[in-house]
Every structure is written in C-alpha cells, then in structure tokens.
Image 1: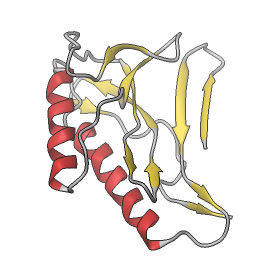
Image 2 (image 1 turned 120 degrees about the horizontal axis):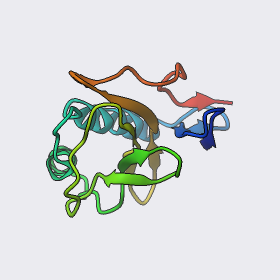
Image 3 (image 1 turned 180 degrees about the vertical axis):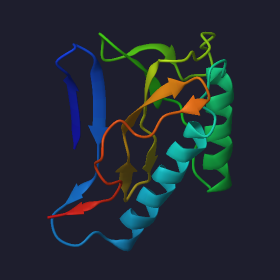
Image 4 (image 1 turned 120 degrees about the vertical axis):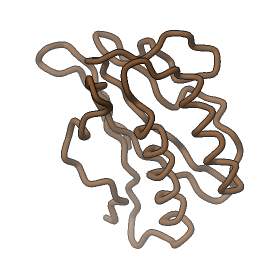
Length: 143
C-alpha cells in the first residue's frame, strides 16, 4: 500500500509499506529486509552536493551483490509542490542534491514469486540526511 498526499502546506510526501493477510512468508520477509537495506544504501549517500548518478551506482552495486537485477526505474526523487520533482535519482540526472530538498526513496525487491518495497521521505540537511519524516515502523503489516 502506498499513501501519497500533500499536507496542509501543499508539499507532497509518500509512505509505502507491505501488508499481507495472515502470516508473511519467509521469502517476503527476506525481500523486505533487502529493500530496507537498499534504502539505507541510498540514505547513507544523501547530502548536499551528492550526485544522483553516484546514488544509482551504489544502489545497483548493492542489488548485484544480492544477486538481484539493477534498478531501471525511478526509485528515488525529489518532491515538493508536485509528486515527482527533480532531482530524479537516475543515471541521467545532473542536478546535485541541495540542503532542504525533500527526497523520497522507494526501492523495490521483486522476483517471480515476491514483491517487497519500502517508501519514505527525508530532508537533505546541511550535514547529510534527516530522520524519516514520519514514525511509521518499517515492517510488514500482517492483518
């Protein structure tokens, strides 16, 4: 499930988690952990002056190390008054990250049998990346 809304100030954020009916299978739990690790790889590189191409390269290196295909879609991007704004975290983006940018990071781990992802927003700070902008636990919700 993904929740995408603009708040009272008109700025967009995203929140995405996996929900299952019943008990989550082990394969899904493992994929979700890899998705969280992939998100952290990107978060570790977010700071003013960061080049989106470097973030994509690090993410793809991580995915390859797990035996997964490289990311070909837009897995992280700026947000503001529009849902998707620059900088696009892709290998063809030239806009560097700057302090006070609102960045959403939503990596996916998928196979023929499983789909897992995590989606959260962070601010670029003068010294790196902020804490997550919300308090929703990064876990699979079993209903």
